[in-house]
Length: 310
Image (cartoon, rainbow, N blue to C red; front, top):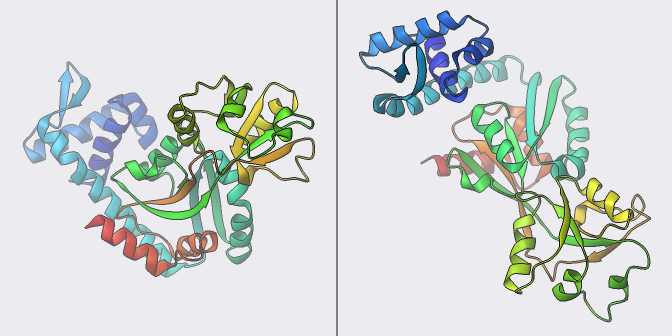
C-alpha cells in the first residue's frame, strides 16, 4: 500500500470517476491510475469501485466505507509534511484563504496588508467563490482558511467560528423617494420599488427573502449579482433600489449614492471563519486568524477545532 494508490482512489471519486482527469491531476497516465487502484484492491481483497467494462461508475459498499479512511490517511500525511515545514521554517511557506467577494473586497484587505508586513516570506493566495465553493475548497485542501456568511456551518467536515455581525443597507440615488420617508423605511415602502441585490446564497440574501416573505410581500427583484459593486453600479443607472452589506458602502467612494440603514428590516448576519477538521495549521495561519478576529487566539481556535472533532 502506498500514498499514490490512496491518491488515485480519492481523486477518482473527486473527479466523478473520470480517470483521464485523475491522471492529469496526478501527473501520470490513465493506465497508471487504473493499475494503482487495482493493486490496492488486490491487496485489500475487495472491489473499491463499481465497473462497467473498464470504466469506473461508482463506489461499492466497501469502497464507500473505506473512502473516509483514505481521506484521513492522506490528511494526516499532509499534516506530517506541514508540521515538518513549521518546525523547519516557521515564517516561510504559503497560506490559502477562500472567501466570498464581500469578505475579500471589504473585510480582509487590511488583514492581508498587515499579514504581509509581518510575514513577507509567506506566499498568500486569496481565492474567491460562493459560500458553497469556499466550503468545497476547504474540504478538498485547496484552502487553509475560509471566510463567508452563509453555508459554512452546514458542512460536518468543517469547524466554524464566529467572526463578526453585520447588517444590510439600502442604497439609492440622490432624490429618491425613500429618502423622504417620514420615519424609518418600511418593507412595504421598499417593496414598491424594483430591487437589486445579491444572488441566492450570497451575503445574507436568505435574510432578505425571509423578511419579505414573513411580511407577505413579493418584491420585484430585477437584478441580482455576487458583488456589491455591481449592485451599486446598476443603482446609479436608475434601475432600482439596492440592498447590500453595510460594510460595502463608503460615503466618499460612493458619493453618487445615499445609504439608508436597514438593520430594522432584515435579520443581523454572522460572518464565520471555517477550518477543515483535523488539518494542521502552520503558526502563521493562527496569526492571520487572530489579526482578522483578535478574540480568536491560537488557543481558542485549537480548542474549538478539537471540541468539534470529538
